Amino acid sequence: MSIVRVHAALTGAFVGVTLVAAWGFAPWQRSLVTAVDVGLFAAGTAAFLWSFAVAVGRSRTEEISVASLYLLGGGIVPRRLARAMHVCLALQVVVGLGAAIARSSTDGRPGSALAFGVLVPVLGVGLNGVLAVRHGAFGPRAAGRGDGGPAIGKNDGRG
Image (cartoon, rainbow, N blue to C red; front, top):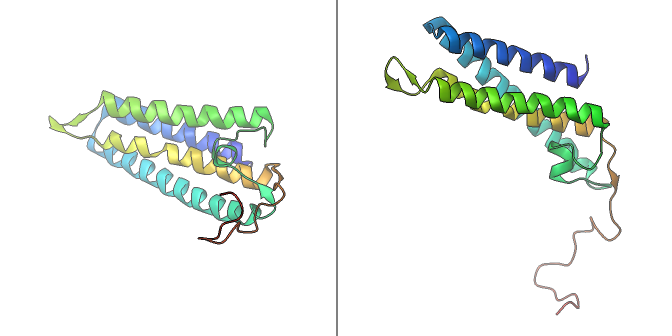
């Protein structure tokens, strides 16, 4: 299954569970939405860290920026893939924030299980990174870069 399909399926599950929990807000629904949100956050964190490690290795020979890696900027993947990933990430942000704002208290006390939804966009950013390092076409590293540059404290003729 492709990264885009996995991202869409996980985003759909998040949206569905969050809407059901926000509507009913029964104790079992609050527990379910918390487990789903924390699980998606953990998966996103793992994807982010893995993609970062791979990007560090590739950056020795390829020019990789944070914007291209995690926001899919610079045309590194086909536009339709980037658009699909951005739509999923936007849904995660809107639904996560919307649910947390809509249900800002539980049984009259401040705080809500739906607040964990604001962590879910880490999944979108992490999966963007996975898509970029697995399928992204980055340009070659610019000449003179990657050699570590001048040693600290050395004057390299720039003043």
